[in-house]
Length: 429
Picture 1 (cartoon, rainbow, N blue to C red):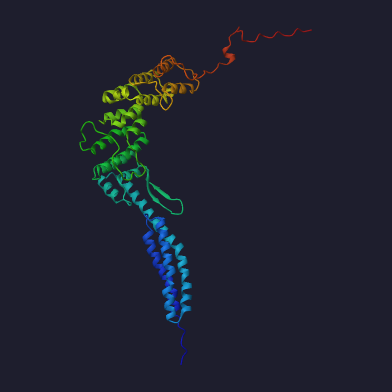
Picture 2: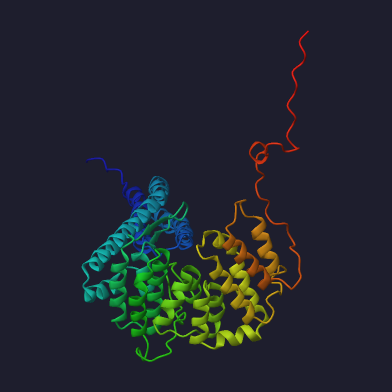
């Protein structure tokens, strides 16, 4: 009768427990946490729970091995099979990271395809692809990416993140994309937020010539596009700007483009909101523009005459760069005309702002100038400005810049008493 073969079924079954459990766990955790939305803390929580389950897994196997009268085989199989569980942990991080990075690359490719569609100019396709972008892009965030802003982020969890940026498309293409959004069915606030994103790029690129066409798009988002007295203010949009939030456009437009920005604002038919008078007065750079503001909106003159701080702020904004502008200007008298008009319209032009009066600030900037020889027109304009800013009879708080001293050789004249007398030669013996 042949000898009975040794029964190792308990060992092999026990050996397979951990590898099978590890394979199923790897599949689950890769599919669940291998996404761009997954957070590292969620992954860590899942690993900790899985370790607790793995610690409890040998209990039923050992009970079954004891029942089969093979407890040592069950223990040995579990011990050798646990190696698979140990390998599964670092392998899971690699698999999850690889899948998440693959999604990151896929998202970048989708946005690159969207950029090509924008270049093509088909507005219907632009709208369709914008809505289909991975990550659920808002219209402002999409246009921010088209101008070169951030699009997607790959979070490496335990290392520095990778960031993807869109290609900085020309402003013509940005206008096409903005037109597609305005013609779509996005909410009014989202359309206006997208337009402000485009305006931010126009400001950065100093493309003032595109503002009128941009303003027409803005008017198209209003309930009555052709109605007079249209407002250009920040919309009530609480979505994602993608890092391109401009805020109230009046401040950036006036601060960057000064008189040209104010002129285009009024030519587009936009009126000034209550909180836009202040940046407008700080940005004005000529008396002609100040007169135009007074004519377009009597509130400017009223505010200057009623609000003590407003005139001082406007004058201080002029004074900060006034000396340099006087140096550069071919007609410095025009700058004096502006300062005199602002001072005349203000309640008290000599009042201090943040502890420094416009008069003292002007004296400071004049004293800090490089020592150059002033033209008569500049000296006359500077004197008019100081008269407008400073109280009557006040003396300069800071000594004016010293003119360079002429060299003695060129300044001295023949026969000048300051010249040393020629030395007589010593008599020869």
